[in-house]
Length: 123
Image 1 (tube, rainbow, N blue to C red):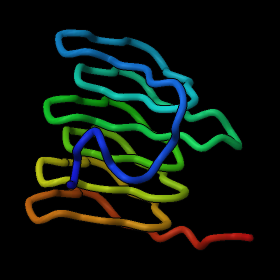
Image 2: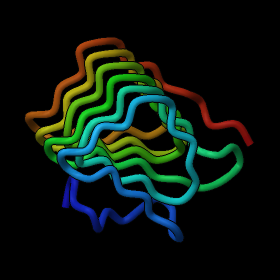
Image 3: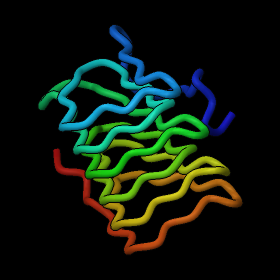
């Protein structure tokens, strides 16, 4: 199911939650999974060389850039998104910025107000 917490890809292990009614001001560096139900006012960076997943859930909002292998957006992102593996835009997902992706999945109703740029897979 698009945008669900049980999405079939991404990172296992630790999960960090930014809960509803919570605002994080500043950049976030993480590994594992990062679930955002509140607001992040800053950039989000996954640890280099690790499998990581960012999920912006329903009413979640990111005001900054996202750089992670796997990203699921069902909230709002005001900034550029860089996904080196898989990017999923669920039905309520909105991106106000440029999207750089290797594999993109968009549901009906999702929205990108910016450019879409495919990143070639290097092996």
